Length: 279
Ligand code: C2E
Ligand code: MG
Ligand code: MG
Ligand code: MG
Image (cartoon, rainbow, N blue to C red; front, side, top):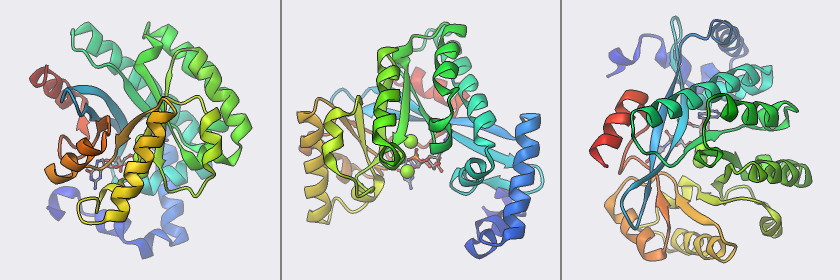
């Protein structure tokens, strides 16, 4: 497997090497080139499943980067570099355009996918052009705004709650939907939730991992689901890998799941095949 993944992969996945400033600089300069040439990136899509109906209720776009010299680099490793360098702004624009194109193609081929979720990081959320970019894009591609879902982590929102609430209100006014990603790990006050114009909580994978054996994780997950429902939000569990996890989540009243149990993130052509099979 190591061979297939490329000769230089080890170099990048070794955390010691990653913390090395030289390697970081190398990633940054490769990333700059890649963004400039719009080369080496692709979007994968991970289906989201409605627990009750068992149907696909959406898909999350996840970026992949294969550099010609460095090999495959995980978003966990290069998104922070893209953020710090500001390269996330042009990269985020490319991601959004690709999502719109893919959504348009799905519609043309008659495949129904209720929505595509797009991850936004802090720097993108602070970009004064963000709202314009999002709105112009759906107009240009003639996409129903309800079929674009914006994912933001709780910690990004909590950096400046008032500003975030205002921006999220504008997205909601435009009829896009909003998901709070990695929910539960940010140590934030829960009181802000009631004023947050969101549609969905995504429970962080770390609560789901041991949900079968740890009563504590079950209690927290159950608490999040009930609170979300009482606030009118739907609740999704991230990182579901087994049938046993799914059973518990079903019992707890969770609405949607995402995870390797149903599907890994797929390249676009495999997503369309998945949708054809499951429709
Ligand atoms: P996230 O948005 O919370 O995405 C979920 C991550 O969990 C993805 O990792 C996904 O592949 C992985 N995952 C999903 N189901 C399972 C499972 O059952 N088991 C395990 N072990 N993992 C699972 P990925 O694609 O490596 O992305 C990591 C993070 O990078 C994302 O976390 C998101 O914060 C960021 N990211 C990815 N794509 C983008 C993007 O297009 N734009 C921005 N701004 N950030 C992105
Ligand atoms: Mg996400
Ligand atoms: Mg997440
Ligand atoms: Mg995450």
